Image (tube, rainbow, N blue to C red; front, top):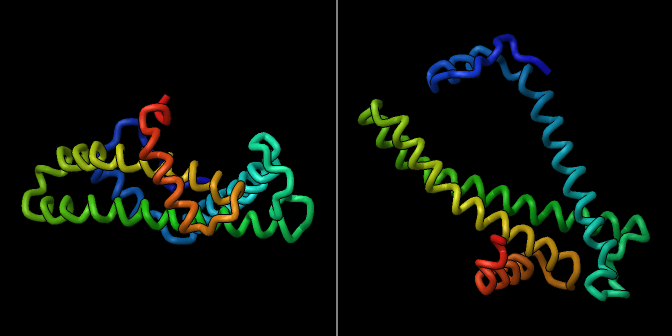
Length: 168
């Protein structure tokens, strides 16, 4: 997978936009498709791995233990539903942080670098919290009979109770 234009190590935002705009959509379809496929395979495999390791949690008779194709499919679909919700939340958070940045840059383009840096520093804690909630919610989703929403709520509760141990 190659782009027509090589990307140098030190690049400005305007040069990066120029490189991306020079490449047509057909050049981006294959890498995006491969990334999406790897995401789906990784999520499905991870969900079934967590369910198959349920003996560590002391759960001997899980209905979603991956011994049948139906259980494997159910685990994969539940894990994909959780991941889709998390990706939607990430896009929403990025959109909420980016909208004021775009408005401010449209009035004063010289502030682009500073505002992007501040936006990244604003998004980092949000992304970290979403990462931990996703991890806990995936465990709850596959090791208990909770729905996706219930697993996310339980993951949020667990993270809020044990914030400092989570970071260790």
